Image 1: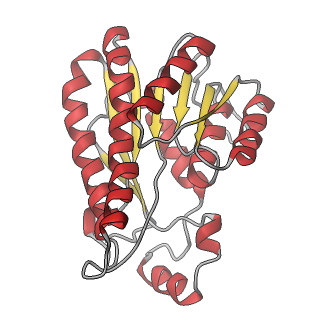
Image 2: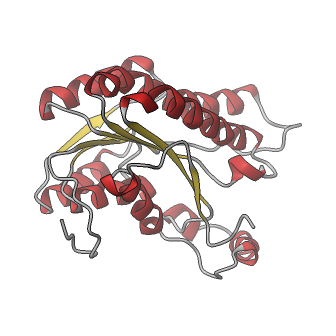
Length: 255
């Protein structure tokens, strides 16, 4: 299928779930999957209106869309969403774990609540959805699983002990699940963005933006579509022999 961006990727008759799909990177991934022919279930926790807008875009590309409110840190909510998607679409082929939060603070000031909340969403949340979909992928001997991590999970980040720990944990989770599901023809990979110009970053302090720009070799901020393009590739047959990888999308920021 040649979508409007000119990417020769065919995901027709595939069903994808995108957690945190109402805004930012998640929204871009959901729409990009639809451009390639997939039906997409969009998870959200608070931003219902934004999720509905994403669903409208998906339908605009001829795909089916489902909007589902779920707290990804809830094991039960993850299972309920999987059941709903199967009921509505009859299958699940792709899971993109994207939802995440940050509660920054230096380690000597970080509270237990700051630590626990980030761990429960960013790491346990990924486990919850992988655990829910793994038996299905194993049984059907097919599946594409992409986890969104961060370059800060590889290098660490001042003031983000909790966030960086979860993103590092996601890398370990990705590699382990890739080993466990590989013999069932399930591809499991991680994408590690650097600084991506989401709405939140656009409103960041100029000092923060400038410091980040100094790290980026290509001298431009990443866009949400830069991440989404890679995710869609990893969800396609073009990436059938790629698994257990962590691929950076950072304009050379990590170097």
